[in-house]
Image (cartoon, rainbow over all chains, first blue to last red; front, side):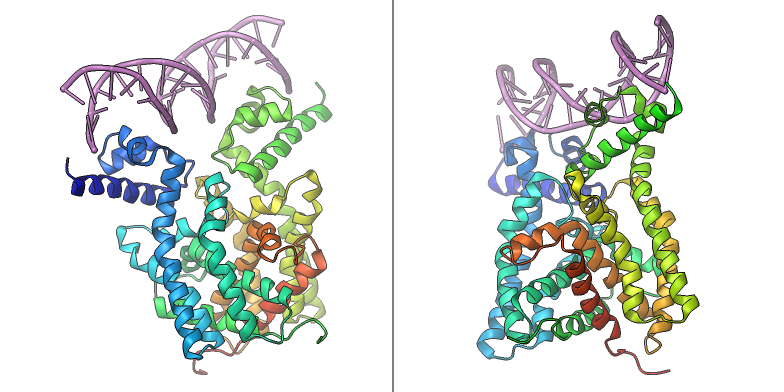
Length: 215
Length: 215
DNA sequence: GTCTATAACCTGATAGAC
DNA sequence: GTCTATCAGGTTATAGAC
């Protein structure tokens, strides 16, 4: 089989694994389910990825990497143009994730649910993924926020960045439930609506007065 | 064996299951791990709980039920005394969860991580748990927030309640990571600090101006 | 590179003795 | 109520033919 078909096999495994991880979780998904869904042989997983653990890492980093590259590129544009405002920082942080989640949802599932589990999955591979794939982004946005919010202490910046991330993680993980909770009033797939609501809340939360005495 | 010892066996199973679910997740935890950890016989789980699924439900509802009873009792006090402010509503919502998570952490683990997975666990039993155990609470707090924030549309109230819940869920799930992200600056086990930071951010987020034209 | 076959082991659940 | 023994089926990973 030529190289094009190899890539096809690898990608078919990644696509099937992604779909099943999103629907049922990592532990609940067996390699047999993945390979039969991808219409490849069971042994192909170990040939291409060596182990289930490495497959898990590949599934996540395939989506996280371009998402975070987009975040950092946007942040750099903001910084060189000196047009940084809280809104533009939040947009640079939120939009790449929402684009990815909504852009891929026509696969017939919401990849957001899989991404939302990034912080809650106890699976060992996840913990190292957060550090290696998210550390740089968190560090850069913490700096950008600290610059945009000079009235806050460093501790407050970290707390508020944490909440700002939590809003996104929960929207990815449980956004579908919003439709139900609101009796159909909310459409969690309306990108502009999601972004506007998130940025409005986060901007106000981040801008709240400092609780600490001025230095 | 008398009734006191029965209760002891049942509780030992619940305690062990809770600990292991928190550490490794539901799917990754086998009944054999649970029973050997609890020092009871393997068959005892099926005798007392009928199935792993019912055990999972029992583990969660044992913690969720008193937590939500406390929430609703606090909210009722606020409403009868007509002292409802945004801060007191938020305190009534956040404090019972934080009390539970921090009160039980001396078991040698953070139960918060297990609670944080309530919204992200794909395990079937979880979805029905959210509806049955959290539906009533969400409905009541949505009403209380709508009354406290008359400038918002119903849709905005739901979005902002969703973000307010997300902040809590992410703090439960990933609070430990904050210590690392902040290079030790933040102590996520300081109850008053956690509450103060959460309420400050959420109060500002909820109070942000409406994005919709007045009716 | 891809396949079949299989090793070695773990899973939830239950029947039946005590 | 608690135990042992066992069922029927699942799991990852790999050896070896093609």
